[in-house]
Length: 292
Image (cartoon, rainbow, N blue to C red; front, side, top):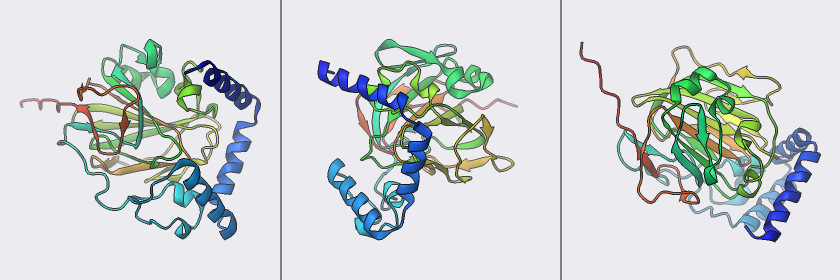
């Protein structure tokens, strides 16, 4: 990043800290849900032009057919648009976006870009889950405004628990994230714990400024988190196939995935790589079954 880019990021961060983050995000959510035709058409058309959104893969390719900006932003893709690579032991990207970082989880620590680190317990809000995942691997993926914003399963698994944690709503663009230590653990987030054939897995959806909310396939749209709150899960858990839709962002943000085992990463995969739902990130061999 050049000097001008650095100054712009510093200014943007300072403004975000001064602004009423929750109020602005709530207002953005209301505007994005507005169904008044002149407003929603103007918003969608301006967004498509500004970010060069390609609707060729969308289930609905006509931007004027969406009933609201949020309906457009969380649009579905046509069947077959995101084929899954590999087999059931292949970890695939849960989102379309940019790989910010991936690597190994040292006990209690989650490695970040450029060698920094932050505490996995704080990110997850659960010391027991952090301990269960220590020694495994992680991947952090950033979704830009133009990306497809539904989140899918990187592995088949059973959802056992979900925890909605309060926090800030700072922007998560790379230029901002580089200036805020521990950013994913500072922002509001939804932490989901899964059991998989390859051991425990956690998927964290991180909120951000202007993110209108998080919506899950089992609990619908979540209210803003005022305090740590469990999100009820069906008794016995919710089993989802690899690649199945899990949730969606009502505006863009970041996803972190943590596994109890270290994936064998795809060669050449590195920070800044563009990924899409279903693209192989690595491989996790299933745990051997105990012999009776």
